Length: 537
Image (cartoon, rainbow, N blue to C red; front, top):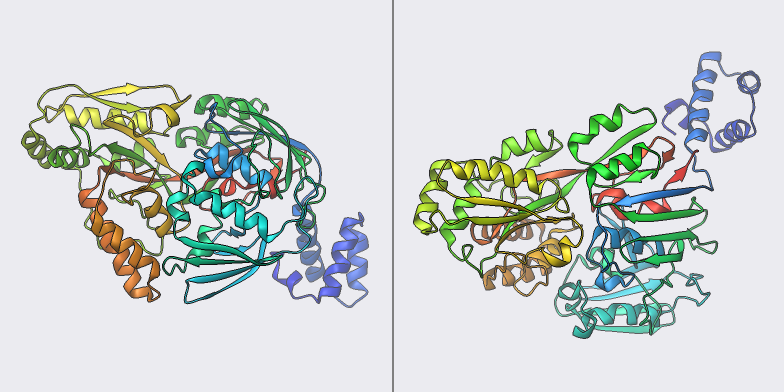
């Protein structure tokens, strides 16, 4: 309730007013009810207005919506360990739950684990929620959790989160609903780690992922990789009253304009990945709106350090000085973003190092380093795609700047379909797009640790790896902050990644879709929209 006068009522009076509104009481009836208690007419009118608004905002049950993510592939998966695209994250969040979940401040909250404690941030004990069942009726037990977490450590699983899971030295059941995790080294962020996309809990022994048998808010009615999935409401979901929708069809439309057209034509009711240039068109169309989430999302230039020309440090520096960051922010993002500095920790993160000098757009420095590199006038393909939002525009801006220093950048656009499996960090120069992560440790571990599966530029720095491990174990906040500052400097100076801007996440939706909120780990409410939204059609 947003009206202060309403909040000042006692709980019994609040319930009486709300119940009357829900039953369809007229304004005259409500005024008479409150007036009988001696309340002034002006005060009663304010309370009635607030109560009416509150009831209007209450979730409604029922309805079916169609939603489009930004990508689709025949490699789409229902295996939580192998998720690699935002489409996978949104789909798996419908069918599975993690032990913890992250709220709008990225604080870990209880999910399948109702509580946890630790000894020196090294030995963690998680107590599981009672009464939770899988979609086939099997009760959730500690055995399921041990199996789910342990499979990430097995190389044969090919888990995308193996670099995060290797820190778990021992995972054992200490009771039917209790699991103990012993780490190789202290990590105060373990509850955050376990709230991320890959650590969903599956049934012990699961090896077939043609469907999804989880504990999540929806049942898997249909799954066609690269085509669609259909989720139907789980009537036995452990969270009371959720989900609100009866059915969600989830698809991927890689082309942004096609997604927007699908929304405005009514073919879908919610889309992720709206380009800032489409915001005005959506907002000016009656019955539609745009939801903004500020976060650390970025589209980045990737220069492979293990291949030419990225193996030449001067070439890498020349490219980084070609970023006209201010122009990219205003012309490409329409100011829906903040300027980046070639390191992945954004200003909203508590460990962001504001003291790192901003790398400028400097054609003189770019030319100096380019001439020192000896690359010459050779055509240099830069692979970009609509799959990496705004990468085509960024490449074209860089191409224009490069021409002014004698560098020959060839913008090579490839289709969005299959980009992440066929092109992402598989070319000497290309683009990636990294979804926000809930902590600095997770982000750096996944993308910059020497042995990380997603080490895009093949940057390997043993000192960085050691500092990353030390920061994870450090409980003194000031010391930890300095460690992360040092790591940001290392990435800024030495990696083959260029990050010109951090982009706001923009979702387009029908005005009849309610309940959207900002979860900064990704668009579409951190890809967990399905159990929170409702339809007022």
